[in-house]
Image 1 (tube, rainbow, N blue to C red):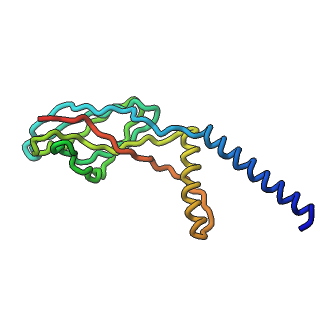
Image 2 (cartoon, rainbow, N blue to C red):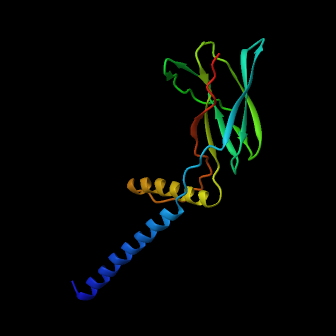
Image 3 (tube, rainbow, N blue to C red):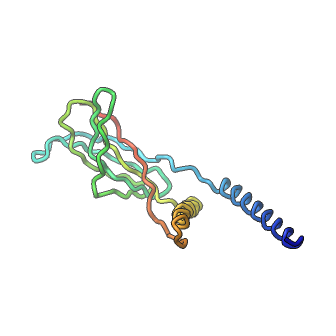
Length: 172
């Protein structure tokens, strides 16, 4: 190899190192923590519906700075110290604008033990958080695509990242 090729290769290695270092620093600066739940679920009351039996009414208040997505699951029952498994959410998810309050109802379990309502929740990211989330999403998707020998794509992901939370524990 000629001296010129060695110098060029050395500069390429150095430039790659510098670019990777800058990318790590920028990623660290732009990293935004996961959203914390800024909503509250309160039990409004339990009523007896002739056709449905006991029905519990809840209110949900969105204290966050953006629109809240909330998917309600059937109630979990506590047996000894363990909760029954979380069942899939109902198909009718709720969307609550910031500062708004909405209500929902669930059938009260026949089991006499304590129970609670699991919910999948998430905020649609905006601003810098949205840019970072879209970048991470595309990075993860394209890393796998490249490993499989496919060409990279840019995907505009507008989905909400849902997390599992719970309403208050209710005892009869």
